[in-house]
Length: 137
Image 1 (cartoon, rainbow, N blue to C red):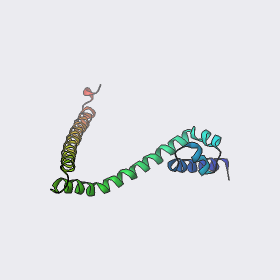
Image 2: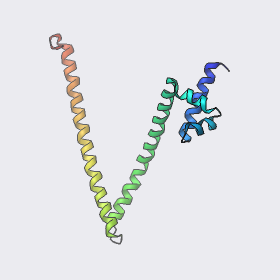
Image 3: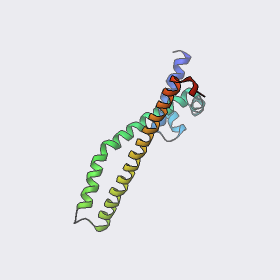
Image 4: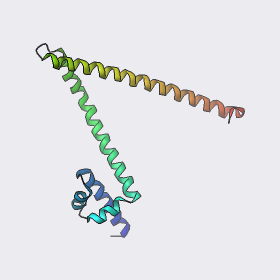
């Protein structure tokens, strides 16, 4: 096995191990490399890039799972809120949760609309400046 492919394989193994173990030492052991080798590998730009990408993918998967479960969560909150047999504190907390999440959703929608409008303005200005050389800085 060439030196380059061994290094790539060690990086991949260490990245995977770090996603599954809480410390570099435990990840090194799981990857079958020494702690000092793991430390050296962890300082390379190739490792940092690979680890950052793996963490992003893992986080994206977690977010997708949360989004999948959000419908059931909303159903549960609404069921508790409307259940006259549920304790008053639980119903109040559910109602507060509904109001807070609804308000936050409106804020996010408003913010997204404002960003879209700003992007349209910027694109229109760019288009105008390319069409009219005198408007360029």
